[in-house]
Image 1 (tube, one colour):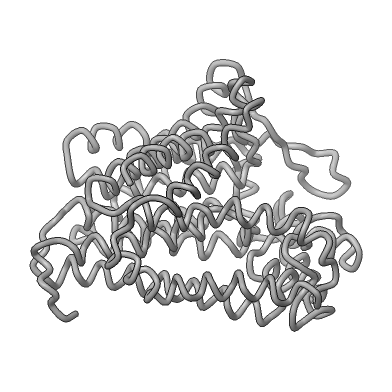
Image 2 (cartoon, one colour):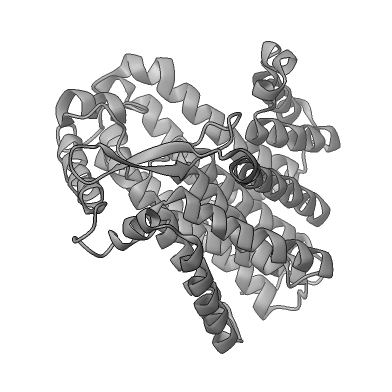
Amino acid sequence: MIFGFYTYLFFTMSWFLHLSDRYPVLGSMRIDMVLILVLILAIFFGKKDVRLVKEIKSSKTHKTIILLLGYIIVTLPLVKWPGSVIHTGLENLLKAIVFYYFTIYFITDNRKFKLFIIIFVGCQTVRVVEPVYLHLTQGYWGSFASMGTGGWDLMDRLSGAPHDVVNPNGLAFIILTIIPFYYYLSQTSSIYRLVSIIVIPLSIYALMLTASRSGILGLCVIFLSVLYKSNNKLIIIILIFIGGLISLNFMNANQIDRYESIFSSNTKNAGTSEGRIEGIKKDFLVALRKPFFGHGLGTSREANANFGGEDKPSHNLYTEVAQELGFVGLFIFIALIKSIIFNFRKSMLIVENLSIKNEYLKSIGLSLQTWFYMNILFSFASYGLSSYEWYLFAGMSIALNNILIDMPEYNGQAI
């Protein structure tokens, strides 16, 4: 299915770089939807490895995703707004879940996995570098936030570039996506090391400009994960300390105040920080109005507008899922997260404890684990049930396992 694989790479570039927005001719063709259709047809009519299909179907992750989709469809008549589910909810979820199916069926060997990582990380890097370049050359910010009471005291915040419609927290998530990959891949070659020396400091600088509190907490998770797995803990601590001192010199007073509001109530930004906590409580109460099956996929904003007093989706993944799918759906989604964790741990056990000595795959495994754990924390301040990352995580966790098991060094050894 080599045609499908390269088409998937192009779809990845088109999706994340928003080529249809950058090039109107591609937009008029609805290129992303065309590519999705082509890839679906490639899965159905392409030649498949029978053993690979069997491995996929036996995976707990695959079974849980099927259960999640089945649950959404079966409970459709029981939710508050089934019409909204049909018109918007299902479409948005299907656009995200295709990353799962495309990954498990098209990324089937080490070379393909490596190429996909290069394209994926490269696209996310462009999404970070572009707004930083515009900021440095044109004074671009893209967003702002209010501070204090009254909402008149404003601070600028860096968001995605004009063709990349992501808010500051969304840009922070992209930054936190690429940092683990660059750190761990820097240990595999001198080229990666050189690029990482440039990209990681630039990414941290961009993160400061976003003034994202969840972003800085996510960065702490990455640092702690790197520190925990490192054999050179003292060096890592020293580098983090030096990096922190340098970062403070680049931040203005408003940015420092915003980060201080994470743990201090005596700041101008403390009100917005407390508002997030109160918002989670309100979102939970909204979820309790339909505790079993929820208001319907994609209706978090609608539910909050009608019952929570704010026309906004829940800014917490777990209350978002509870609002939309009920607590039964939340249980299924947590089971999906648990199955992905199991897959990543299994991959690392294969690499570390058996006879497979592939530093690249080990680095990718560590990168994915770190990114995944960061995302679990980040999701306490961000919605994402219908976002691509969870389903890409699921697909990559299965693909990595299958690639490792297929390597000659594995020999079916027990873990």
